[in-house]
Image (cartoon, rainbow, N blue to C red):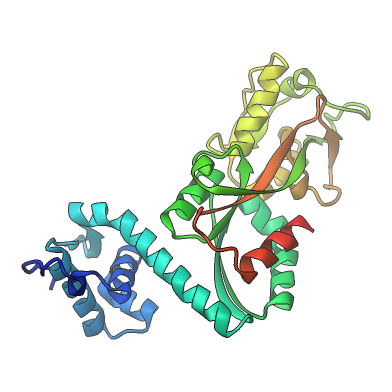
Amino acid sequence: MLDPMHPRGTGAASLPTHRQLRTFLAAVETGGISAAARRLGLTQPAASQQVRELERCLGVRLLERVAGRVVPTAAGEAVLAPARRVAAALEDVIAASVAHRSAETGRLRFGTGATACIYRLPPVLAALRAGMPGLEVRIETGNSAAVCERVEQGVLDVGLVTLPAPGARRLTILPLQDDPLHALIPEALAPAEGGVTPAVLGAMPLILYEPAGTTRTLIDAWFRAGGVEPQPRMQLDSIETIKVLVAGGLGASVMPGMALPGPVPQACIRPLDPPLARSLALVVRPEKRRDRGLRLLEAALAG
């Protein structure tokens, strides 16, 4: 099935089709032709035929089977990123035409961090549903660097990230708001009311975000500006787990105000001294059209 045939000529008929690219990408993402067929609403033979036609068109083998899964060959890996960009661009063409036929339908592939997904998105999604009931919203979570990469690849239409995010300079940045950070401290360790300095917080056992995230980078810089090298006892990627551990008296943390909508039992929320905030923004590809769904998302997040 996956053996390439001789490439066709260089005329327009030899260009890959949208369906071929979507089938190839779905096969890579799902690890199988049958799974790709189910995702796209095709029969398995039809999906196989799309992959064969694409390989014949390009003159290279794109997929191979390894340990029971379909994976890209070296040529497939090289084709993957441009295929995503082309597929995304074609879907933008389709979305643009849909916008002229009906302003009530569309699709928005949105990437964000887990904290925003828990604390910020529920009212935003409710606003999108109220403002555009026919909008299909797909959510993917990751740190800011990963979200920027997926937006640049065309896998996501838009991302909510913390600045400065690696890769964001290659994208269009739509600033939203600042999110102040606070200290979360077990009641037994909490100082008197007032701001908490790097020296005071650094003397406590620390439970911080994973080091790969932009928010953690900002937190580390805040400590170092105060002459303290942070030495966390635990580093986690779950904000809810950190809150539970702090409430259990196991250490103190620094977290966004977004994640602290109200009191945390057995813990105290204190402002940082000096203050620290993270800047939130939406990122899109420069060529991305700001359609109605994207404008509604921007307005809902800014509200």
